[in-house]
Length: 417
Image 1 (cartoon, rainbow, N blue to C red):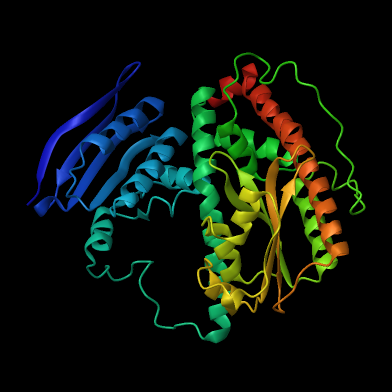
Image 2 (cartoon, one colour):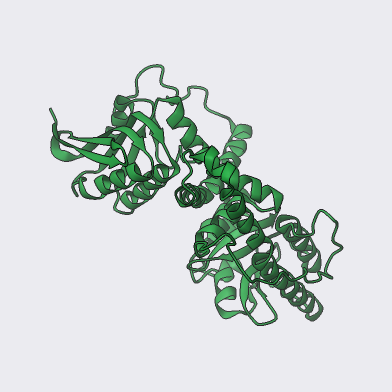
């Protein structure tokens, strides 16, 4: 038998809104938090406090039972994601139980289902923790028809796509929580609609807009960025721009990668942009990367990686023979992809600020860009860096301003609260 503690009660403006009962299983290895009520802005603070203060250090598993939750807001999802990440850093695991359609819809909308390890009921969650066999009929049971070689490649690509999506989801979830709380929106759908509509209108990825929103200072008036001057887009002579490309970062970067591949005859290439805070590199556009190499580029942040060294030193880094680079992070991945040489060129603006790096991969060892190829690379890198700086200061800011404008409309606030 386990033991229980008195419930933790969180009060809203009109009385108790959330109850959290804590139950310890034998040995305190597993803790179950049974949550009842509404996990809105106030409830999320109560849940966060409980997860930070009521979990003993010896507990390896924390199961958050949401079956009796009648409302789950974006701030609550953000707390679950952040606490799952915090526990994972110490080798522990958070799981959630959600059978209600509302809770599952909100978790799905915020792309958080996999991040918080959702299960259908408490016994299934406990089985996942303790390694006991799952009940017959469980949708997650092992398949007997194991895929053969053709299906294996598809599954690897699916896993890569899932990993790529998961890397962006915590940022989107945190941004949705900020929007919902900042503008007093009752449901997370309203926050999602605001970000999605502005991202689509300004040809931005949702993740890019979410990251910019988290990095920007909070608005202090009806206009988020008062007094700014909008500049025209800088010219891009390296390729012809269509009407579809103007202001569209994905389209511009795609054309840029194509040109770079032609300049140097590369078999694979990728553009990584510096992402604040901390200067982490994120892959924004690529050509012909194998799934393993794409996954490596997206997740590798070792300072010895050539793309990292190019950004830090603001100079081109050429590894002429990957096989001889014994200390190179991801060396085996590169060799498996058939890469003999790696060339990383920083994207420097006219004032020498580095906004990213373009990396090309070559089959032959000993490849070095010729003087003409190096000149073309540097010219293209400067033009695209200057354009990206303009885009961040103009188009992205326009998109943030649009979110603020729409969120503060009287009809929007009435609809969302």
